Length: 503
Image 1 (tube, rainbow, N blue to C red):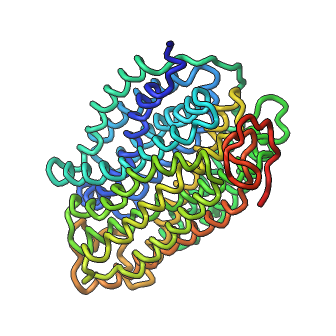
Image 2: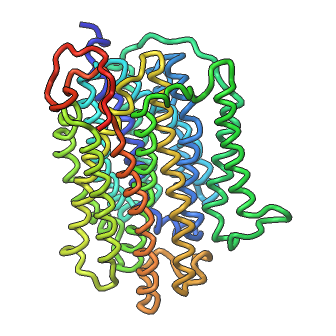
């Protein structure tokens, strides 16, 4: 039996790299207060460490998915893994916030090359009615990363310093490279042209929107320099993104984003939903970690323990949900997960208090968020990829991951702006200078207004998760499925091309 007929070993090898990417994101969220202190910077600059990474991750995804189709997912994955691992070393040696942000951009480019290849391999090696289990592993990887990342990050930051959250990627990257070389098969390639103008328009548009949103509070939503204003940048970014969409529609060659894929209703809706998930998951951790370390005085390790119930719940439930995703209408599973995520965040918001009984109260909504995450990833991924033709697997995976990352980078930028806005509204006007927030426990006089700001900020990701729950209610039954009948939800063996049924 050749490697191509054995998809599971290949998937496990790819999951190592995907796991490293996810761990890196969660590790950084725990280390933010210590980076703020160690590099003597401010809250907004520290958040740029995440935003720059996410922006560099999001923009190339449409191209890197297509590169995988053209040159083979294995080759592009390995190049991205080398880039990510090398940039991790650079991050660890960065001696200033500017160098760290630059290194994170390079790291994001590596992650962008790796991520679409994982989904493309799943789509091209697993039959549609078996992808739920594969996507469950993909989702469970997120759960394990949520557990390992914060805990490992806390231990490394407390014991060795924040630099080691990046150094740890180097041995993992080497192991992942060897595993991928041995286990991942070389899949057939497809000829593609590359839409350079589309890349430029999407990159410029996203950068202008994200920079405008995140830096808005810094410039009081007014003038940045000369005639350039915050709102002018945001509007210009939206116009450029609109031009990108128009170009994709009129491009007679091979557009960067094949708009015809969006004719599939479930693909369109799944992309809308995953953008809300990316926004929510990225934005919710920042206020929680800042609260734990700056108000409660927790060490990075102690603050990471708040996330343990979330991860411990995700890991055992994800495989169960993955099996259900092959049998049950995905909208029921995804709606439950997104609605529960909104409830968990509102719960957190209501219970944040400088004198909160941490272990009795804050661990409960963490577990609720774990259940929510378990019911989100596999149903959305299966729904998005179910009808993708093999030749468009890379492009479809690239679009899906791009939309998720765009949601993430907008979430990071929006939460940064909202944190600054709520801190100012609660009387903490020196927040942007970093003088009050030096990485240690806040004095009692500012602890309550800081807590109020973090509590109010959490309502934004809660609202976005609720929007995602509404979106998935409009899913229809996927085409070509052998798992559901049109009325009973029971197996129908041999059904051919049933039309999707709106319920």
